[in-house]
Every structure is written in structure tokens, then in C-alpha cells.
Length: 267
Image (tube, rainbow, N blue to C red; front, side, top):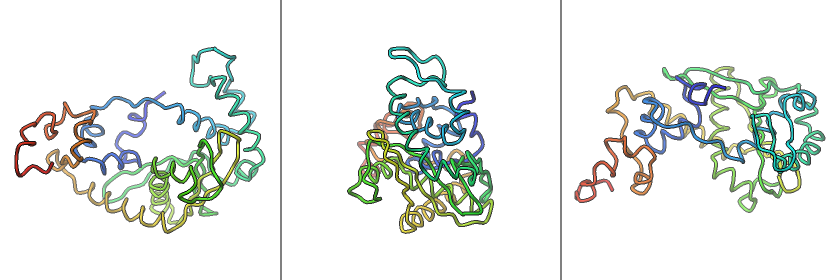
């Protein structure tokens, strides 16, 4: 199976743009020079992918491909589901089957790959569910628990901002606007692992619109980068020290310790 690096080569995705915003130099070394290793998939991401697959494939096709392993059995392929995850998944599937996103799933294009261009940049994103007619983009997420309200007191609300869900959804909305000319609402179909509770969180415009503005500003900035010298290290001191590509970067503190002693140092 092609890696994320291979599948997105030559394209700007939401993840890549977030790297650019953290540090231009890190983005250059990782995505243009290709120096970073493929990041490991987390258990949480794998579980979320199972939910995506169930909604996308439908119940019959899902169980044709995936198998829940017996206790203490090791995974041998991406279609093997750990027994501990299988128990949680079965509980959530029963809840999913009662929800409109599953019952009305034919109203949406599933795993829609949108590509477009912006100021010479090739953009790409894969949308869990997209309806040009309904003007809606929806993504499936799982969390430990939630209260059902997109509010700062809700645990999922905090998770959403920790992992930049509004940023990614805003990026997808921009792609739909550029390619199809539609202004989409964006929502997250969220399932709690502890009890299978389902909730649709529509992210309000007061959160999405500033994110769109931030994304366009960064895309404009990226579009003006023409040479290696244009990509400058902008990471904060502690992040620069922990950067996985620090030893390969000519601008990092680790390869230029004298910067710490310079009165003009940005650190």
C-alpha cells in the first residue's frame, strides 16, 4: 500500500500546510527534500479509520474485508482488528446503524478525493463524506467521551482543537469552494468509545471563517516560496531543540549553538 508521502507527492494537504505553519524549514526538509521518515499510525487513528471504513463500505462489504481477532492473537494485516478494539467497535456499530449518516449514506460521496489549484499550488484532500448538492462536508471521529455540545466544557471540544479538526475541515471547505464553487457547512460525526454515544457537531462559522482566512494567508505565503533560501526556520527555541530534523537543518540551534550567545539571536 502506498505511503502518505507517496500518495500526496506534489500536493499540498492540510497536514503539510500545518507543518509549514509550524516551521518553514521543517516543511522544506520533510516534504520537499523528503528527509523525514513515515510517521507511525497511532491506535486512535487506526480506530478512527475503522469507523470510516464501516460507514464508507457498508456493513456487508466491511465484514467481507475485516475480521475481529481472537483474544491474544496478533495482527498480521491491516484488516485484522484487535480483540479489545473489536468489542468497542461492535458497540459503536450498533449506534452508527441507527444514525442518519449511515441510513442516508447514499446521499454523500464517500472518501471523495478533491484536487485543485491555487496560485500555482496543487491542493489535495480526501473527504469522508461530501455532498455538493447539500453543501455539506462531514468527517467521522471517535473520542473517549462527549457531552453532545460543542462547548469548551466538552471533552471532545478540547480534542478537536488539540488535533486541529476545525483547521482540516476548513481546508476541505476551501477545496470544495475552489473546485466546485460551493460554500459548504462542515460537521463532525463523533462517536464515544466508552458508550457508543453519537453526536453530530456542526462547526459554527465563527470558528470556520477565521480558519479559512488563516489558511489562505499561509497558502499565499507558500506560493511565494521559490528557492531553498526562501524557507526560513521560524520555530520557537524549545521546538527547535526537539525537532526530529534538527541534525539535518543548517538553521537549527543544534547545528548553530553560537546563536545562543549572540545578542542579535532571535532566540
